[in-house]
Image (cartoon, rainbow over all chains, first blue to last red; front, side, top):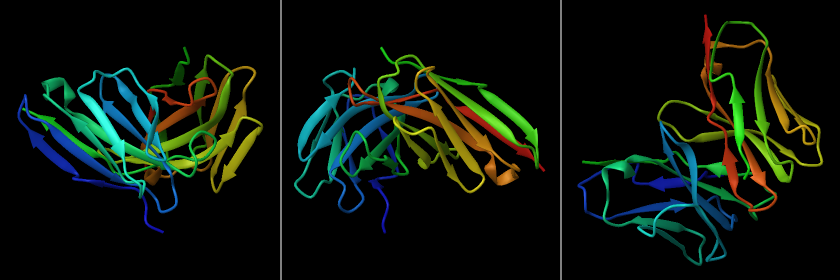
Length: 113
Length: 112
C-alpha cells in the first residue's frame, strides 16, 4: 500500500514569502502530524490533526499553521518566511493517533534565501 | 517536561559486530516508544514500536527492549552490515500530551 506522500520534495523561497506544504497520509489513517527537523534542534513537533481538528500544537510562532481536509490530507503553511525556517519538514500519519505506529513521509526540504 | 536522550551520539563499528544503541527518557508516563532509522536527507523509517505494556519487540536482526520504570530502551542490532549505516532515532509518545518526542539520534557507521 502507498506510504505517506509529501509534496513538493524541495522548495526554495525568499525571505518574507509564504509557503504551503502538502501531506497525503496512508489510506485509512486519520491522524497527521508535522515536524520540523534542523541540525541544531533535531526533530521538533509542530502540530497534529485528527479528523480535521487540531488536537495538539507545539511551541512554534503563529506564522506556522495547518489544516486537515475531510480526506485526511493535510497542508502546512508558513507565512513571512525567515532564514531560520530553512529545514526538513516531515509529516507522519497514524491510524488513530496516540497508541498507534507513526509512519513518516520523505519530507519537504525548504530553503529560505 | 519529557526529555529523550540517546547515547552515544555516533558509533563506528566493523561489519559483523553486534551492537546496542541506548535511549533514555525522563517521564515514565508514555503510550509507547518507537525506533526509527533515517538515511541522509530522507524521511524516517519505522523499525519497531513497543507499547508501554510490552517489554520487547523483535524484527529480523533488530530487537528493542523497554523498561518503563527506569526510563530506558535499547535497540540491539545483530551481525551489523554496511547497509545498517544510518541515524537511529528513538521517540516516546507522551502519555500527558500525546506528542511524539524525539531524541537527537545515534549516527551509526558500519565499516566493511
